Image 1 (cartoon, protein in one colour):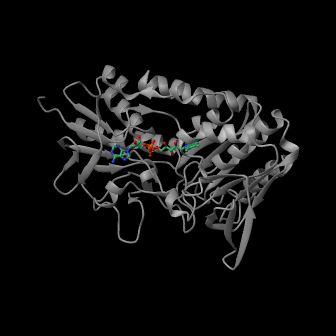
Image 2 (cartoon, rainbow, N blue to C red):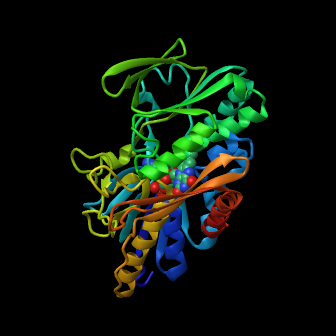
Image 3 (tube, rainbow, N blue to C red):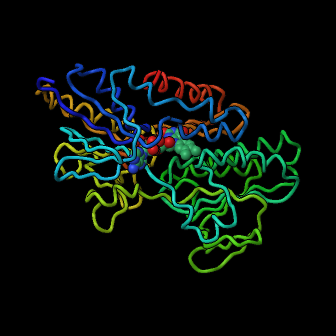
Length: 391
Ligand SMILES: Cc1cc2nc3c(=O)[nH]c(=O)nc-3n(C[C@H](O)[C@H](O)[C@H](O)COP(=O)(O)OP(=O)(O)OC[C@H]3O[C@@H](n4cnc5c(N)ncnc54)[C@H](O)[C@@H]3O)c2cc1C
């Protein structure tokens, strides 16, 4: 361990896995890279949608994090219970770890219990992979009625995901010959489907939904779920609206992991870790935070979306800074706010959304029309990363 550094990475999701692998490829083995996660597998978020449309199963899609060990990365399967950036250590249920560099990539947690009546009345959470097969089975069983997809709050991961889900459900119902008897309605508290995107993209998304007879209801903030399969919304902050449903699927409220709340890394009055928008540095020396656990404001209304592609881009910038520091080199790596994502629409087609959030004239978003090529790109997106990180 002569001159070897200890780099500890909290979380083995998008940001954590990208970081660990970049560092390992660029550092000799006398530098220790440790990744800690309470889960022992990795699964890409959008696999939920592939389980929903019947293309995938959970068991065949998850990859063991023990594969990290074959790459010279130490993987600790344990729950992190304390982060102490002042004294420079973290604790898990079983051990204490000191570090020279710390990367916090703990993602976001879900808080469905914040929606009154949701848990007791057994709505479904689109973001919980363990509920997706039940959602699919319920959809296949339904002969008539209404499926409601409800965005409960902002921010949430992968802004296009609820719309992708609605289009995939549309596809399932068409194949099941029940589409004519079942309405699909999306409710959101925002005035447009994708408030992070510009007018043109929102028009394109609205058109796509309309073409598929999916009804988008803006400015609806969910208040409660009743045991009579009815939802109560506050519409436009002034009026109460009641909606009946047969199947309720929510995008739950998100919150930062509780362990982060007690670490001093979140400023008073904020909900996520505050970092420099270019370097991802926190206020503590050699402590970085990336991905969903951060909030990076681009302007008054827009923050960098919670999406794996940004966690990965930020990982690259953080790793370059750590490598520079260890090697006594200097360069000026900066997160560029660029990313992309896919918007699957069923029938093996996907739209492609390209974004530049630090664009000089204001955030830029472009939606390319759905194509089979973009769908293939989405398949490769998963394949290439699993191979690079855990293959
Ligand atoms: C349905 C759906 C579709 C999506 N589609 C896309 C897409 O097309 N493109 C895209 O870029 N993104 C997509 N996303 C979003 C993407 O999955 C997340 O934004 C991304 O995973 C964030 O990466 P991260 O590293 O910040 O956190 P995560 O990947 O969530 O990783 C955080 C890790 O920290 C661990 N952890 C948390 N707390 C503790 C603790 N106390 N102790 C130990 N471990 C802990 C968790 O177990 C987890 O493994 C999608 C998400 C969903 C749900």
